Image 1: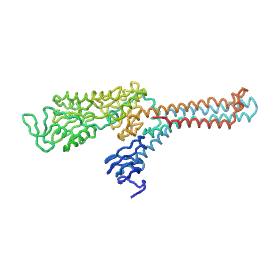
Image 2 (image 1 turned 135 degrees about the horizontal axis):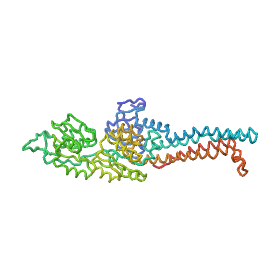
Image 3 (image 1 turned 45 degrees about the vertical axis):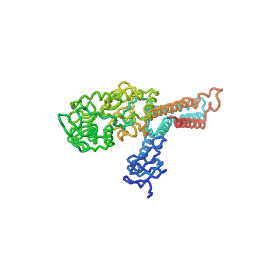
Length: 528
């Protein structure tokens, strides 16, 4: 059944055939296809979509047929929000425009004074009221500050539109202007430098641990002599306990542990008394046992016996893996190694930022050893490691106190305070709505290479604005005296300049405005 897009409501099931546009935002229920999202992200390569993936309205289904549930329609769709954001940014005033407005507030009275003096001087000198009036009119016409008024908004409109073509959305013109001043960029690690899709690589068990309680296959563990022995792989049981506890967590590391257990087809228990401990880990009760999963700070805070696993933690950290400690009933039972892969383009993006003269800083909750290995691989200048979520904003503030004009790039809810604290907050569009709301710039592609592109666009736009203003002020500085008749005594000057007619003045004023607009349109040819 084909119906108009306007009649689609939330919860409707929509079928999109190959070659058709996706009408509204939604989540795929059936099918597999590739979708052209270049309209949204500027990325030419189609994106694969399967069950559970989000699809965006106005993108084009390339191959297979997909069936999806509508989740956002009308003004709520991503396209509608982008259009609204671009319109707001294009209509907002940049700080430099406010300075121009202040100058214009003095410029207009000054022109009126010059026009009055022109009339007085020429009427007193010649007694010809017609000639004096013509010069006054020429002064007023040629001094019309159209070019001055167009210099900034035309560049802003073109710059914001150019950014939208590449999936770079500026919330307002202030963000577009301030981005060119940045001299330090702070990058959140997970989901920004790395893919944010960590995977379990190692499961290390303590010698004292061989299982506890009931095995995942239903066999009862037997205990003897204080050492727990079981009829199953202790590593699998360790993973069973950790994954069961992490079922209530939304942290990427917790999700990786759950995913690893599911891939091994280990049955998971339902946790009780779940508690998320910010910056440390989680606590829960699984199969009647008190479980702690998190970093070493959590183990030390809870006075857990580490059972000689410190060397294994060091080994994992030296391999750029995150060590997730697991404690059962107050005893460290093992460590789960989790690694996240670096995003394609992250190293290239950092190199481009260095070319732009930026100091690049990485901020992460990971331990310092793991963080430094990743930083060295990507080319990061400074590292803030073991940072608690609530402290991210204070580290940004610390950089500002050191004299840096800071841009913060993040994607998570815990990045929102730091994004708001930064001089320019930049949110990865694949992140949370809270992060995007707190940011000044949103990168729809989720590609770190969009950061240097946004800065380059800002620099090009500001250069363009300054060119426009130099032309507008230079035009008025030169031609107002000409219209007032300063060249009249000089016989070598052409007659049309010695007595500038209002018609010529109007033509010159129009040419000035056209020149400013034409120069602004050159921004469309800027390569990002």
